[in-house]
Image (cartoon, rainbow, N blue to C red; front, side, top):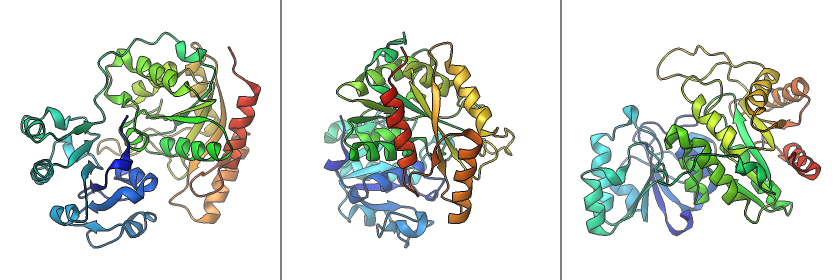
Length: 358
């Protein structure tokens, strides 16, 4: 298990630090800000994290790597995916400097830093750990439905699109459920969740035949000693690029219930690798039907609540969107970051009291 509490991080988000363009950086800043010394982004240098994101306080945004290290960093965390998936020359210089100074590297990139012909040997020579959070275990099974047999009540976050708040929804629910005295685990299925929680498997880096098996293993582990298991969702069944990961996660985790997540202002699947948006997001009831029908042959499940991301809306518009979602679905709805998560907490507790359907 890896915990963030042993390090103070300089987050690299150069050129992309913003509300929608630096998901990994933003989530780390939300959930362990006390361990972040600075964010490196030459575009926003001189500002505070609060000024860029609307949260995060006075953590500085710096434009110089050495300046960021000098603030007391003991590890470097890559908070964005660079364009094209390749490390820019400046980044390579930064990471080399960090390793030479014996700072750990935490990366969620699909390109594994530890396998790099320059960085790998250098890290081994300096006895520096490189955490490639997306590198999957080598012994994953093919799923056989065992996740359905756990005694814990299992919920999975599903979404209308990528980057609509599935991980955040589950983390906020976990926080509220724990405050209510419920033994609740959060199961990380992506690199950002792994950074926050300290364990998990990035299912989007798993060979297709074993995605469901990875999800199954995570649920079995998360259920140990817990009454409620909250599984981080990935992608969307209607996303033309990532639906395969979503389906594997859905079938492998065998959830008792689903939480539907949506960014209230988003009408189409987000920018699809530079193309104009072309996949229109269907109404709530249709989305719910898509997910429940996809799961039905393996294990019947039901949607018990709607989690909205309203960060880009006024208070009046956000409350209106939440009310409409509740009216259209007949389900409790809220934005658990902006408002009280109680409607969803109550739905989870009520569903768990009713028990599992075997």
